[in-house]
Image 1 (cartoon, helix red, strand yellow):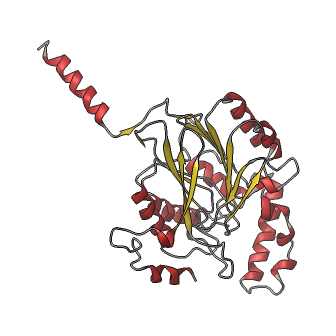
Image 2: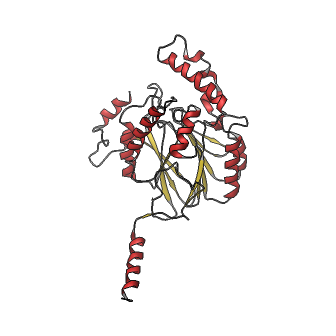
Image 3: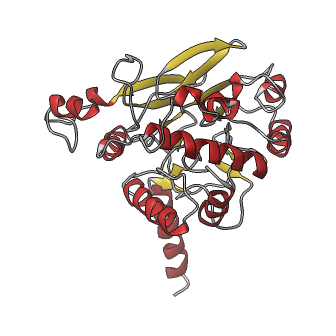
Length: 337
């Protein structure tokens, strides 16, 4: 009997060691201990210090049915260790909790097909008004947060971080603008109050959120790389509600900034580093804009610097040469128009 117990312990150790997925507190670090959490799993693929992850862009703002489902299957084939979002995951824009619950249930059901952890981040469709903030907190926890994976720091930034009063002003102006777009009211969208609001284009970061990320950056000064993800490109806002205060802290560090919202891909070098605005992963598109296309992003972390690859969905094919769930390439292209 005494000789059997050590044997069982050894077998258990070997079983755990051979398991190809791992939950390791040294690999994945964060500061969110209470439920709920803005990710759906903490079980990652075990591997070397080098790793890869995926990013999806805007789904909504005119979501085209089925495109996101295709992206999930394509990403599963490429098999990154986890997937990040940059917001606009539901249509949103309502104060009705029943509608919000139905929309999030629908998205979560589709996102559950990912074979790796998925991290949530809100956009203007997801966090349009104070009631939607309450709903988000109850379902996903904090709107902004950070985590570290294999000594790479991820700052998940809330670009809809307005004071409640200002948020309601933007919300009401947006609702009126949408009525004009939908033909319910007369007028031009470009003449609306919402169109001219700075928040519509760039969003904002509160002092509280800045203080939070300042503390995170001061706590982790020697990470391998930092990624700043946000929905709206708040780095385009030059006042204290923009990104400039954090950029000063990041001056001597290696980092990358990734945002969405515009539904048109662009890249520029700012402060000597990559600032990228992603296209769409199912969201509405301008057919006359050549930079408006469906894609997802694949980032490979190496010992030197990240290798960032944007994969157009109409070119990611299965073993038969077809787009998963779609069939031939032409049918997928037609669904984009």
